[in-house]
Amino acid sequence: MKENSEQILINRLLQKEETAWKELFEAYSGSLAYVCSRYIIDRNQVNDVLQNSFIRMFRSIESFEYRGNGSLRAWITRITVNESLKHIKQNADFKIITNEADIPDTETEDDPDLDEISQQEIMEMIRTLPDGYRTVFNLFVFEEKSHKEIAEILGIAENSSASQLHRAKSMLARKIKEYKMSKTAQYE
Image: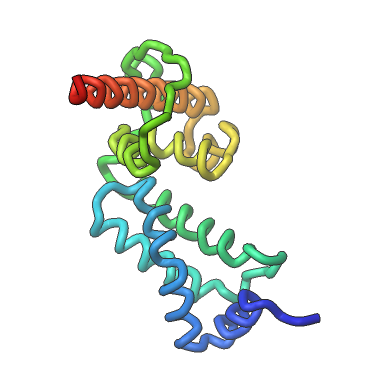
């Protein structure tokens, strides 16, 4: 059976070959920085988390288990998400709203129409969500975690995760509606 390029790279990484690590960094640092920036706003902190992620990859490559094409990307992405979560938990400003009375009431919006809004603009809107909302939203939407898993990861109640996701979606829907209204007003 012929090895693919991912398997060859993995073998080189396992041998701690410096050029292989440089190749990994060059190939994936952009997409992994994007993953970090979904959770962390400050660019310097994103860079710190990304660096910590690559250190974690280097130190734990022996634990990597090849499960087919794409498994390397999945593994390094999971490490980056975990390092991002570790960072925001350690950040004194990070706050998960656990008391329902502390959650501002937002009206329920229908799913917004995303036509004519770029992915980049939507991601910028997500980045403006409060830390707790943004974290739960990212874990649920992008990492496909259940509320039970999110609750375990963040040390919160399951219903807090569900409430924060609901509030995040409502806030995003409102931001999208405002964005569309401002664009429409520009053209009138």
